[in-house]
Image (cartoon, rainbow, N blue to C red; front, side):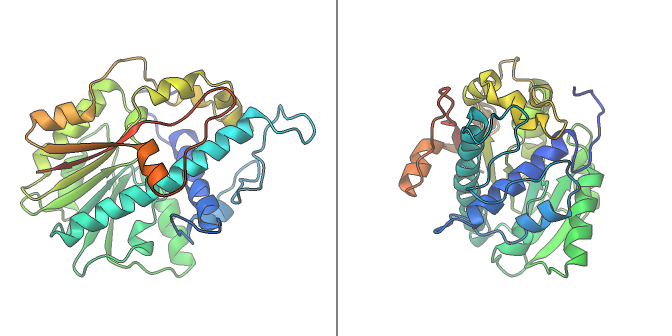
Length: 303
C-alpha cells in the first residue's frame, strides 16, 4: 500500500508501472505498422530484474498465476487493451510535444518521466532541453542502462531527481529550467497516482512556472479508472510480480477535470476522447469481456 513518503525503484510499487508502460511500447514497436517506434523499451525490460518474464510481443501471454492451461483469460485481454492504449497515447503525446517545440517552446518537462525515451527517439528542434523529473532510483536505472548501452540523446537531456509530492519546481529551476521562457509540460500516466490535493497542487505549480507561449499536455482518466479498479483482471495483473495494483492508486476522492483548473488559471484548453484518436489512426481500443475500456480523454492546454 502507498504511504505519504514512499519511495520506489524500477521493479517495485509505482516504479513497476513505468516498466510495464515500457513493455507496452515494446509491444507497439513490434507491430506490423507501429504507431510508435521505441527501440529502447525492450532494452529496459531486459535490464530489469523481474521475477517473471515481461511480454514484449503482442502474441506473448501475460504471466498469470491463475491461468488454467493455455486458456485465454481476462488478464490477457486486459494486457491487450493496455498495450493498444499505450500505443495510441504515446503517438498523441509525441505529436503534441513536437508541435509545441516547433512553435517555439525550447524546454520540455516530463513529469514522472519513468522510462520515457523521448529524448532519445524523437527528432527535436535544435536547442531543445528535455527535463525528466522522477524518483532518484528510477532515473538512475534509466541513466545507467542507456549509458552502458552507448545510446546518445537527440537533444540536451537533464535528469531531475525529485518527488512530485515535494517542492519539485525548486529542483527543476536548480537544474537549469527558466520559468521566463516558453515550455511544454507532460503528465502522462501520472494523475491517478496522486491524491486529489496533490493533483491540484501539481497543476497549480505548473501554472506558476509556465510562461506565455507554454503548453501543457495531460492524460485524464476520469471515469475510465473506475472501470479499471473494478475489473477482476487488475489484481491478477500485478500478482505475478508481487505488486498489488489496487494499492497503488486511490481514485475514491472525486476531483475536477484538469481542464477546469487549468482554465481557471488562464489556459485555453482542448480535450479529445481517446477513442476518437484511436479510431482516427485505425487502432480502435478493444473492450474486454468484463466490459472494461479506456475511453478517457487527452487534454492540451495553451497559455
